[in-house]
Every structure is written in C-alpha cells, then in structure tokens.
Amino acid sequence: MTTADPAPVLSGEGRHILVVEDDGELRPLLLSLLRRSGFRATGARNGVEMAEVLADAAGVDLVLLDVMLPGRSGFELCRDIRARGGLPVILLTALGEASDRVVGLELGADDYVVKPPDPRELVARIRAVLRRRDGEWASTETGARDRAAFGGWTLDTRRRELTSPGGGRVELTSGEYDLLLAFVERPQRVLSRDQLLDLARGRAFGGLGRSVDAQVSRLRGKLGGRQDEVAGVIKTLRGAGYMLACDVEWR
Image (cartoon, rainbow, N blue to C red):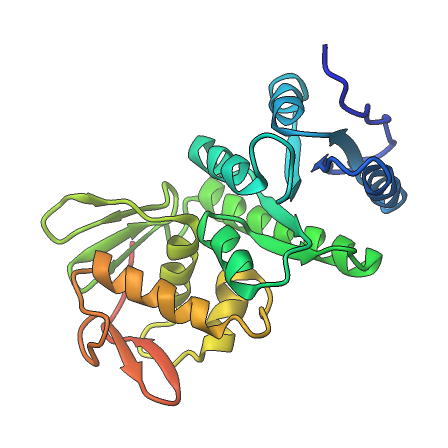
C-alpha cells in the first residue's frame, strides 16, 4: 500500500501534478501551492512511491521531481520516465553547479527549478511546460505538418523519429529532438544560443549556453557531421549562432 500523499478532488479540470520530494516539510508546501493554483496534486517520497502513483493514478500530467532522493536519484527516475513515454518532467534541484542541471536536461527533463522555488515562478514554469506539450499533442492529433524532409533526412514529429537518408532510424534524446525541431521549423535562419534555449525548452537558461554547444555537437554527430564543421546540415556562424543550412519540405 502506498504511503504517498493523497490528492483531493478539485472541481473543474485541474491538471494532475505528481510531486516527488522526500523533504517532509517542503512536499506539503508544494502540494498546497499547487492545489491553491488550481492543480490536482499528489505527493510521493521516493521512486517506489512514484511508480505506485503512476501505476494507480489516472491522468498524471506532469512530474515535479527532486534530484536528491533516497534510493534512486531523480536523474535515474527521469531516465525511466523518458524511456516509457512523453510525460513532462520538471527537476527540482538544490544543486548549484550548472553542469549538474545540464545533466538533467540532457536526460530529457523539460525544465528545472532551483530550491527553494519561488512559488509564482514554479507555477509559471509548470504551466509553460504543459502548454508546450499540449501544443505538441494538438499538432499530432491534427496530423498537420507531421513530417519534415531536409537534406535527405526526415523528422516525423508525430512519432518523434528521425530517419537517415539511407532509411535507418536515428535515436534522439528529448533534448536533441527539441533542438532539431527548433532548427527545422526555422530553416535558413540564424539562431543564437539564447534563442535555441528558449525554443527548445520554453525559456532561457541563463548561463547554460555551453549546453547548447554540446547538444548541437551531439546532434551533428547523429546527422553525420563533425563538431567543428561550418557547412553541412547545421552550420556555425561564429559569434552569431547556428543555422539549418538546407531547405525543409513539410509533408
């Protein structure tokens, strides 16, 4: 039997947020904040309780996930969630190093918030992630513009799949997919690091510009390019940013 905090039934269509936080003082505060903001909210103290809630509770819309948990870390749990599908994840972290936050984003987290969170900022970030995911799902349901062809490659936005010119499937992390989608939606246009952070994650991550360079480098590798190339599918414009240097045909 789970010991997770129960979620009250609210009137209306409040989105269901699962808060995975082992701090016995912070977790109730987060649940209270979310409920006052119109969400349904359920608490869990660790990965075991998180799994029980995800298995038993219908319609969890987003997971607010602490990084430093007893047992399996939030990084490991984020990887598990990503492996099972597209449930949005926001990391809740007290870690001060930018590199630690980059790890979470590269594992597929949609956003992160540093503890102790500002209540209004936290609610705004949750709503922003949900809006972005709603937009992706709406596009999927309508079937509009669901395949982008560029330079022999094909990106299926309905299935979130990249196919090589030879017909092979190329695995993308959530961050790599978001970055590539930002490029293919804006071909032949120079995008700065800050713009790419905004477009790929829904907000600008101050001080994390290097994470974009790392993501672009990995994406180039999967597109058959080199880290230092100034031509090809993704072109570097020194001092300006990056550009998808080929035309895109939407099907």
